[in-house]
Image (cartoon, rainbow, N blue to C red; front, side, top):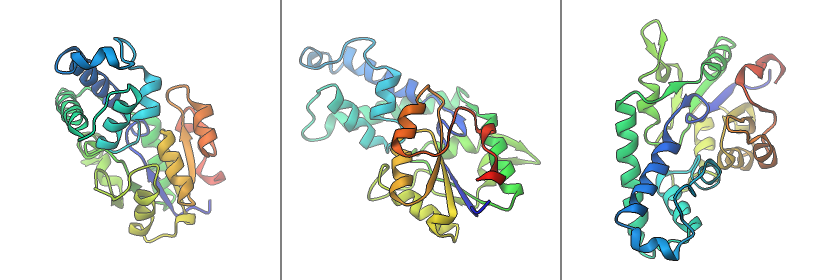
Length: 237
């Protein structure tokens, strides 16, 4: 294996998180309540916020960028950004509630890949746009008194960057903080925007298709694309 660093996204890769549920519930509640007068002029209808919408408009993006993208998709004008801020705040309240309830689980195949790479001497970085990623990782026990958060040599989760995914800034910074060149690193991602960010930074990306989106990840440049990270053999990369 020629890679000395592995950079992991969190949501959808290591953690089965309730982000999609939180984004959808917040949007539906706003459209049924404070924004109900905006609904007739939009393309929104109950049930219109599908998994496909989440993947295309929100997955992998920083919170405000995702909120703006969803509003634009449904045709809701937001010239001053007030709706996006309201939506982002509503979603954050939902996700905090779900985290406190323990409404998430680890992806065991993701943890196994991390441990295999670490045993092979590969340095690990966490690089999620989500400001909630550390809350998930710090609650996952991996044994020996450690949490999943303790396994990383560098942690960029939730850090503010000038440009979010699909810009490569977060991944290039992760490589730098591991003390490695981008070409010596590997990214593990589940979102199209994250794959695009890795490719733009000249970093090979393994795509994990948890939501029947193999074709989209492959088209974005992921190689290989797997449905389970147990399929990834570090010795053959």
